Length: 397
Image (cartoon, rainbow, N blue to C red; front, side, top):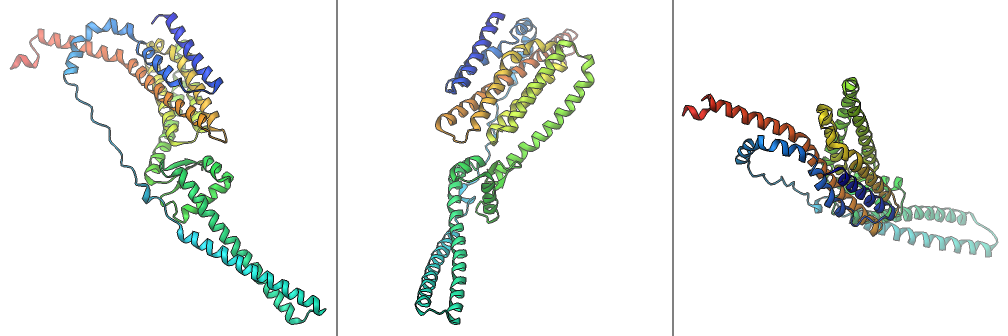
């Protein structure tokens, strides 16, 4: 693509994203970016391909002869949801019984106290027996109140469990703030509720994430979450090591490359910050994958500074677009009421993140393509020389 074409493409993408953010209408966002970004990234190294194609043609043909079919991806078994949740009927029936008994005993005791007071009023005196009876009835009323309170608490807990279960049953995880919305309780109350229900084994495999922002209801899903968090920690450690190495090598890097690497590091930090601010396992996996891809792209640029020209468009258009989308998602996700339009917009952004990840994967592959061609060319030349010298294996048969 010519520079003018790149500028026009980047401006169109930037306008598309900005208009979507301003209007909060993300319906056509993924389609628009998907139709432009893959073609753009695919042409980053078109000039290199034209130069190297003839030299590496024989090696490429041989490689294709040995290419095998890809296997189907492993399908992970899904835990049956019926085995994950209890049916707290005993607690519900106990709550009903305690509520009924509390109301019954409390009502009878209150009526008895009223009758005794009326009799004492007419008699004009309050005998010792009346005082003892009033005291006993008072204790019964207090006990009835406690019984009623416990019964209502049990019924409320089972009702909230049903609400929570409705939100989490299929996906096996749910954001705490969503549970706050459906129950009308504060996050502190909901977290206390969930811990209580997990201890009672109503959620048989229930867990809360480390930040206590998400309920996870299967060991399988929690295992995936733990792997993701461990990967995050490892990525953070790797990132720290990489930064230290970059600082040590900064003096040996050309000023233009150093500027690109520093700017890229800033984008990675912004994306990581958005990832920390956005709860949810699925979206976090997409963003973590994006961090990894972008990090590897800049690692490649650091290893081969001559490839820096291939990522200028990524720096000018795709990374700013990515950060804008993540910030828009964070803003949408932070709304207390998740209406249909907000949910649809979030889904559209998630699909766009998949498109961007595919584009970054293609760009990373292109960054290594020149090396692959060089290797293929060397092999082709080596085979030719061996054949001329009569040293190829075929010559000994």
